[in-house]
Length: 590
Image (cartoon, rainbow, N blue to C red; front, side):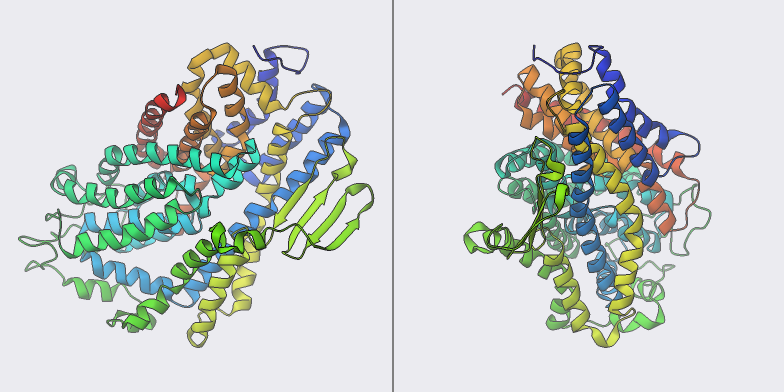
């Protein structure tokens, strides 16, 4: 058994150290939930006092962990701000509107085609580029505008998002979440990601038809099963392949490939059979076109009593955007899609080591600033704009922090791609750059506050000192000793729990990653495989996060339907967790 330097109560250390986590769960499930902006800060404060009073940790080390946690919040916040700026730029320049219209035209009013192209493939691309709930908020309104029921659209997109979130925002849950929580190297991040991709791929082939049946009648799903599985294959095969060598690009590149391949399948009607739209008892209003047969003989062929597809699409487009209905030239297509392909190109050239930009953007020397900020620490700024604060508060553990301003997906690629889009379409912008930046600042207030609490909690969980081990290590060792190999069953649930109370796969990995690694090492399991189980749980856990459900519901004006959504989503999430755990068993004991 591993030796643990904990509190005076042995196994009961676990109960006390899990109190902040238990509080977070209580804050979410109570009749009037406490916002995460408050609950995460309270949980961090609880852990702060537990470390000082119960574990008798060194005060200077605990305070230094809080300083580092506050600074660490800059990383996810900068990524979120960059992603918001990019998509607001796409909205202002009408690039996003053009993409929505184009996808409506491609799907030709076929419900299954719409769900797989817009809900599945397009969502994968957006998740890979931005994450943080953006895909569902973008895709759900499009599906609803095409006649799909609201509540079921929310359910489908939330679950779809769970299949991609582990690689969201160019792999932030892996390179930042796992990297910070357990010190995972790039090779370890890729190994964890490849195992996650394996579990996700198998889950997708089994569960995606079930998810689609929430929006389309089961009989129609069965008739179109070949198309659905081919569309899934167009996504998860590239996902699995790319995950073998990258932790950042799987969702982004597989989303691009999936859109192209799924659109091709739709164009040639591969596996597509006639089907009808489903009316939902959960919707108060059904769109005029809803419930019409898509085709009597051929997919997309108008029936006698059916409104022509082109007219239905045009009727759903505001007058000011009718010019986007015209057939585009090759140049138009290139420019309208520029925000996405430019983002991909910039990410690729800054991450392939042989090109040389990666090393140039992460250089910590030469220094252009090297200031001693008294007892706070040593502030540095390199010529590559890498900001650092070392020897924080003079703690004996030499606690340090750094931020690679040009390498973290913030200025490059998001602000560069967004600015280029605004420049190209400067004559037809709906909002000025100043208004867009103001909107980004306003929308960042709540995430910043929540992430400050989350990252402080994480640093307190993973920090050790001369008097006590890290709480995450203590929890992992004590639980694994008590449960033995049965801890594996708990692993995926912990990941889902982290996303349930935070709405973030990254925060889930940060919170429980160190717990999972400590347990794996104590049990003699492959810790990368157990971290993959954690990642899969954290990914699908987004589907049952109340804040995510409320956010997407608000976008389309749905109120008080959280219970209805949970009732439909929870069984699918449970199946995902079981399958992911079973798939990982051979890896765990390898």
